[in-house]
Image (cartoon, rainbow, N blue to C red; front, side):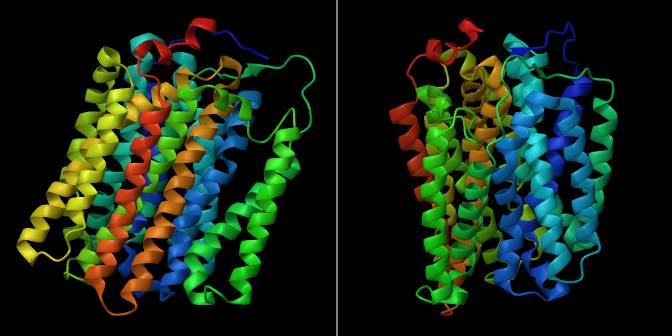
Length: 469
């Protein structure tokens, strides 16, 4: 396979359109973590079902993002971006119309499929239509939508839910998706020219992966309800283990596998992807912290959103700083600093034993550190993954990298919410929030270790694939 050639160079309009597309994911995904009490009181569903609904978007995004990345390479990255935006509109519309768990859950699944199309396709467009420093600049803005969007949408979602009603979040998401479609209109198609034997699609690899991930997610989110030693939980654990075993068995024998394991032979790509998975797992911080200050400290969704302002400002400001650090000192040190600072920020938020005013100051500073760390980490990590992927596999490689983001976020949210919910059920909300947040600190520490042991120390290593393209 070879990359189809084009003389088209990316424009600011394309960048803005792509950022809008990425923001739609965060509007419908991240805003949910700040409006849990509002949705529960309006729709009247259990916390277990709501936790499933929250994690489903990231879960289905993670499951299908690699498939969508491969389809983007084969059939066209613009086509997949448009399909993703249409699915975003459909999923948001179903949630606007939801008055029970059914439409809410279906809408969240469709939104997950939407993100699976948008993320790898737009990341591939950034690599295809931008070069050198222009690419790093474009990736910074993509990261502003992807990483900065989480803080922005958490704050905006809280304000909208408090003063307009939570359904308006998804109405606005539809409007932004439509604007994104308008802005990217006219961009030439980008895809890989197909040569030789195309091979069959790895259906069984995908099927076993879906079964394994869904079962694992259900065990995490519903295990306490089913009973950790109940037959239902045990059966799901067994199905997960069997499916995971067959998945790896199938993939290691496939020449056209669902997961392109050959990409992981590049240590820089592996380190960026693993640390990305772990640092995204810290997204559970937003669920636990926002729920705790609303339930435990009596804040409204808007007030809890105000606490994240430092996060929003810092993550947006530091993404460009991360880009400059990448250019001057390489990717490794910014990724280390980013993971460490993020861990410190979450640790400050975990001090729930502090009295109201002092704790709120710690939470505000903690959010600022959280955003500071993620902002420094974002562009160096993304650039490391994209730059170390072969040109004819950039869609699949981007898909795997974003799969790590989505699955990390899904399981991080599920684990944190479950830890918080199980302990809170005993009546000690402060301890529940502390343990739930410290769980996210552990994810950051593991991300830090992945960078230290797997990411090359020199800037030169980040560019190895580009010299061979």
